[in-house]
Image 1 (spheres, rainbow, N blue to C red):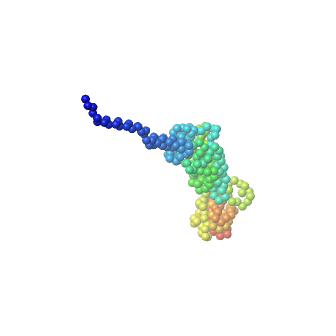
Image 2: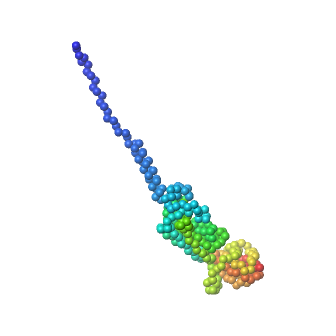
Image 3: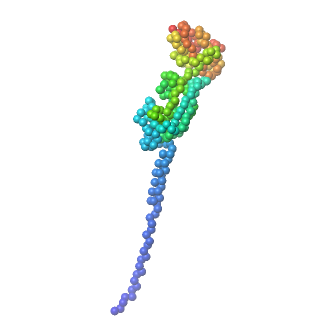
Length: 292
């Protein structure tokens, strides 16, 4: 039998199996890295993407312990251990032109105005000032000028308190007590004509007249009359565009008026009658006081 001479086809070579491309693996690694980086960034420094009062630290309780009680002004207490806790002292002195200069000395704490509203981090945040419990201002540094008008708007008072807060507006606390300090807000001394008057502490006024401004020979507001109960403490505030002398007739109270500066004169209205308040050099009537 004759065999076929048709040649057989060569076997098709087997292709090696290729390894999967690393695109998906790279995306997975990058995504995981981003998540890890984001978590470490959020926990490593204060951020501003958290709504005030809610933060990762607050939710997890990793910074102190959030108490159910608040500081009396609606901000919850964040309690930390005594060792290493923030602390503050406060001192005030009358400003030569208006109000007071307030100085805060802090320990284990630094002011972080760029992170306000962010996460609560130990030893960081801001301070708030209160006058006899009434809120005055938020402070982002060691020094703050407190104008007299702000004190009057708050209803007056003498007890100035500085309290420390975290960036998320919770109040730092130790033993369930806010971290704070209180001092007496001494009233600015009046300009007096005798050394004895200068040494005497100025009492809190019962009657404060609106500031009287002398400019280009005119008085604002227009001179009027103010009725005062006898025995009351009166506070006069005058500012002149030229150097002059303030004089209260009948009480023989005087004060120098440096040009462009507000001067405060405080005295007790212990005499009955009608008394004029004027300037000596320019001879202008500023106001009239009716003491009954």
